[in-house]
Every structure is written in C-alpha cells, then in structure tokens.
Length: 225
Figure 1 (cartoon, rainbow, N blue to C red):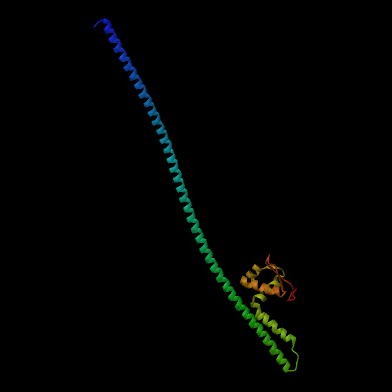
Figure 2 (cartoon, rainbow, N blue to C red):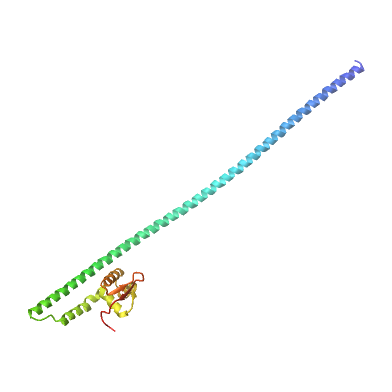
C-alpha cells in the first residue's frame, strides 16, 4: 500500500471517528436534554407533592379545629341544657309552693268570710230578737241598746277580721299607707289584705291606688280627733 493510500485510509478512519464522536455528542446532548426534562418533571412533581401535602395538612388542621369547636359547642350546649333543666325544676318547685300558698290563703279567706257571715247572721238574729221583745212589751226599739250591741260585736268579734283591723289601722295612722305595710303591721296575709281593701273600696270606706298600692280612708268612721 502506497503512502497515498495509507493517507486516504487514515483520513477515512478520521472521518469515521469524527462522525462517531459527533454521533456520541448528539447522543449525549439528547440524553442530557432527556435528563434535564426528567429532572424538571421530577422537580415539578416534587413541588406539586409539596403543595398537595400542605393542602392536606391545612385540611387536617381545619378539620381538627372544626372538631375542637364542635366539642366545645357540644359541651356548652350540654351545660346550657343542664342549666335549663335546673331552672325548670326550680320554677316547677316555686310554682307548686306558690299554688299551695294561694290555696292556703284561699281556704283561710273562705273560713274568715264564713265566720263574718255567721257573725252578721247573729247580728240580724239579735236585732230580730230585740225587736220582737220590744214589740211584745209594746215599746219602741231602743236605738242606744242596739248600738251598744253593735259596738260590743265590733270590739269583741269583728276586730279580729281583716276589714275591721284595716279600718282601725288606717284610723290610727290618719294617712295613706301601702298595702304591704298594712299586711306587715296587722299580720294579715297579703291576699286577705287585698280582698278586704277591695271590699272596703267598693263600700266607699277607703280609696285604693292600684299603682302605688296605697290605701286611704275616705271618711272618719270613729270621729276621733
């Protein structure tokens, strides 16, 4: 082989080597691009995973907070329910006591009214007996005798009843006093005082103010200074 042929062969080998190197370079560049793409995709997936993890953590914390709030509200609701039940029981107890007190006062009023009616019946009976006795003697009824009977009955019998005791109290103080003070000073139950005051007001013996609850005599029955 001549030198020229050897040179040509060497040139061909060099060309082949260059082509091979270029191919390998292109291959490496392609692989590098693929690696960069894969790296970028991996980074994007990593970022997405981190965002998803943060979202999950936020959702978890939100759920935990909602659970804690729900438990707190449940505890408050239970406490309020217990409070309502306690107040209801207390109200029921107070209602029962109030009803019992009203019934007792009603029974006492009925008893007192019956006693008053009985005493009034006795007054009428005494009047009839006195009148019959005077007529039998062909004499007129002595008004002073009858008045003495009334005074005796008032002082010995009716003084213990609400109406008379309230009138005596008003005559003693000579000014308007509240219904509450009448009850405390006489010892009469408030319901009985209220009933007696209305009876006396209807008979125009006293004036009663529903707003101030003050009672005042309209006339001086005893004619005392």
